[in-house]
Image 1 (cartoon, rainbow, N blue to C red):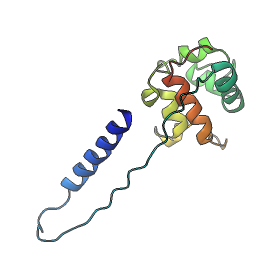
Image 2 (image 1 turned 60 degrees about the vertical axis):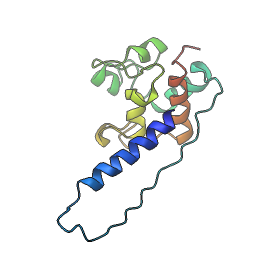
Image 3 (image 1 turned 120 degrees about the horizontal axis):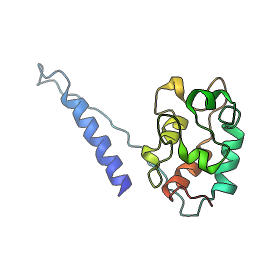
Image 4 (image 1 turned 180 degrees about the vertical axis):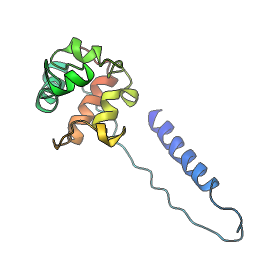
Length: 146
């Protein structure tokens, strides 16, 4: 169902963009090619916070998002514990259990938010696609403390 929504949304947006073009010269035909990415189905294997997610956070996030860290001071997001991660920032939660698409953490690590706040930043390497997929799967499975 999720992939059906994505494809429908993409074609709907393509229609909207094409519908906004200049129609003063209607006899002129234009061909627009729309490429729809095929995404892999999220693995059905159970993702563990302790063995799969925590190591990703330790490697990529703890430097700033730990007690006294730059990110913790700026946003109040402390990722040292499951409870801290689930509490989120002073602006609200970063994890929406069961919904990775709307979880702020995913928006930030994928760079779908403002590029200035893409995580990690300040010259640190981005998370790998595999790491992002693991985080998304964990969130979609309910973001459990397992």
